[in-house]
Length: 488
Image 1 (cartoon, rainbow, N blue to C red):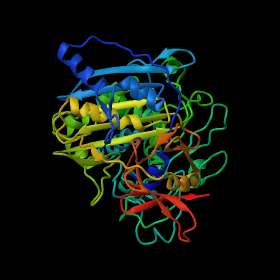
Image 2: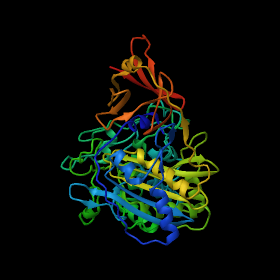
Image 3: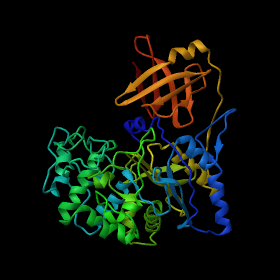
Image 4: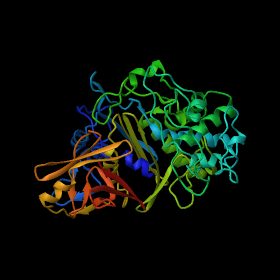
């Protein structure tokens, strides 16, 4: 995950009303697994003296999540799926297993399948210069690409040295830009031009802008709309018959669409944003359909199925770039004794995550219609425990201390980084913080400067004096880098 991604995942919240859907009657042993998942939601950290295991309704209420949908894969089969809460709170429409959510960046995984199918059919070479395939737009040359060209491979695993991390989408009624306008940063596009800022190849830097270029490549090669190509060549063959890339959504799907909610629980204007950036952010789907993609990928990896991609091409997709976790449209994580492929998604009002074992046929997909993503990993941890994913969930244990009141008072104030504004305030004997006016989160101190947040997994978060020593900043450790929120 890039530093910018981590920054935007920090400190979020909304409103809640509980409605649990029991759509399918499962065998007794499966029902028992469902109960284990629902009643054993655990966070990344266990703090001495603080509750660390909850029920799913408790966690949804805590995180202010409106609606949640989940599908669990076991032994290469969909074992169960269930919806909780509201697809639309105001209209009291419950989440069902058929409710459709914006998959956001999970769109990139299915996009990679579509691009690799073209490579499999010898219609493109993923190691060729992208400008060889682009007819209606070309990536402008720069000092970074003078000696080394950007390839399709670079686009899919974020090694292209391109900017534009993600996209904001467009409200209903807004003018929708063309792909070329978006790539050039021309009005009515609301993002900057997609351009080179580093030499392609040596380093992974997440770029939704780069993946958008692959959308244009698909269109230029196939001479058909991207959503049509993805439907005919990827979604339909995988059995993802309720999913689509069409934006705005087709009218016959309107009743199935979840409404998105922002960090404060307010309904997104128009219920959801429109994303013409289809390849990086435009897929509408549900956990059941995504489970079909996961199962086919697992089987194809083992040479047991080839509905879209061959074993060779699937293995290419699931091979990480050297020294990184970036595959082609997926990320590869080694956890415990197994390797997993995964991807998360974050659009306005929607969050999602899937995790799936490379071998063994296990997996989980979770989607919420909320800007709050903390619950996703908590539920994944619960699934991992219920299904004995060996050493997947290993909570960190922390002891907390009492910090003197005058020390706490020094930290009270406002901090910022880019568009993220953090407010730290004192309530009783404890400190809390909120991001952009979102739900308060308690700071649990492990020293007079270091603290943990139950909602945010980080190796280190602390108050640290600035260079002049006059104020304290909030510093979050992200890999080998520090993310600093500056005191105002």
